Length: 356
Image (cartoon, one colour):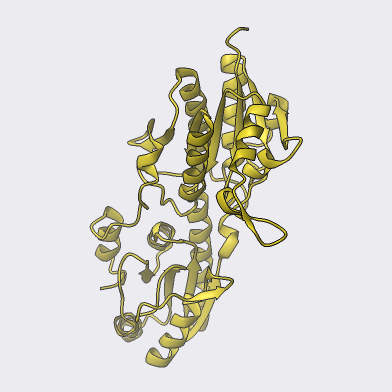
């Protein structure tokens, strides 16, 4: 076929559930829908730096069992900005020309990149410099990519956090404890507020809304007065101390706000506290049905954009439909929890302490 295309697909940034489902959809649509070739690129941009290029010709039998598989079988990386790539001698080298050369060496007609806001910003810049036809698919458990109501991986992360809360109810009540569940959320509190409401939390703390330890403790004391001997607290890892200090668990990574709160709660309320940090558990495992659905719809739509010659676009989920939006607008700002949003109103209406 004269118009037969070769399209590449890669996953970049942190892993999450649903990536394999998106790859599977890209391959099905490209091969079954258009008779094209689909090329999987290993380890994101690192695969394009390698010589020979780290890539594989994808077939439908190769991807058909991937719908329920967690992670990404192509591998990914969130280390080493290719515009300032750390070399063994300590120097920082711009290796984007190697990436562009790798793309053209594979004789690709377009590239579909699955990533979060940071990865998509880097990939878009490389595409502009290297004359690469680029289409983006949003994925992040934080759900903070703008202009899309859902990103791949978010629903599974919420499900895992909600299940943890469901289990904690019983042990908290049995021991009359305040249980603190620290969940991921780099800059946004979407996981915390969604799981907190769904899991029946008594307190939800997110980075978008300030709080005071005094009011938090008052909420716990009121429950004690009412004869409720335990409390469930959900906190996003990006929440700062009352004084605005960022707590890091080491290597400049979030983590530790749960223990900070546990110490303060014990001091002011006398409640015995325990801290549970879900961490990367939220990224792994079998994707939820909704994540599989969204990923599949995104993968098909991304290939259709290539067929239409619409590049520098990101597929997005809005009002139960997949649309496409300019990548530049989607990554211009973080999509954070708005204080006037429906979930904030719902949490406050349920009597959940959500800050000041």
